[in-house]
Length: 232
DNA sequence: TCATTAACTGTCG
DNA sequence: CGACAGTTAATGA
Image 1 (tube, rainbow, N blue to C red):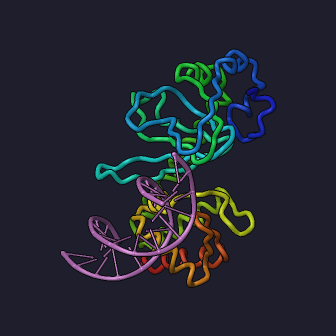
Image 2: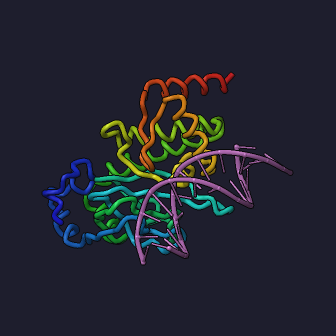
Image 3: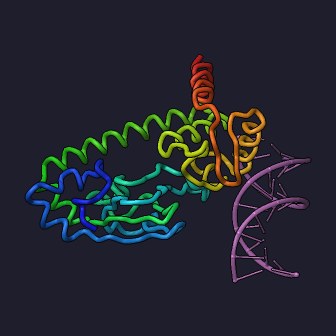
């Protein structure tokens, strides 16, 4: 899999692949296929490098001490997975699982470090990426503190809509109710009940696992309204 | 056809 | 709101 004809133009490796020093590193890239539900990073496992998603959908999750899973973020074409591990810690703090059949590009930690030493543009872009990730997780903490279950579910649906979009009125991602609760930070039953109410209110529609948001602006409005109320 | 999994509902603390 | 139990529907070996 050559970087030069990769469709993911926002991928940081692709963006800098024309730099002279990159040639020697790109040959060390490994491509691998992951089938749906397959995990390629296990929480607590020794760090073995950095992944870039070439095609497919990936969920990044973390398990709490009570066995509760929390979905941290999603990754699709061009996104980075496993970036918290290399250099600093010895073990991954997260797990990464393919939600669809997925093609991954892998670099070992040492290759990444050599790359960062020799390609300043890549280093800067990586740093900006880390800063953005930090911002996201900080605002995530704030949300969790003040939102009730209904708001968490709605917020999660809107997040999926922003990241994956909708085709024919249905979200372009399939999650089980359990996974949706892992994302929203609640239980499967609460998600099921909230989805049922939203369906009766004709805010969403469901076709088995598939969920469609009928009026994005309306749900957005409800979130901001409720958040304002909670601030007072 | 039977067994397993997922979606859903009722109820209780 | 979370947890448990129980029902129903879909899936597939």
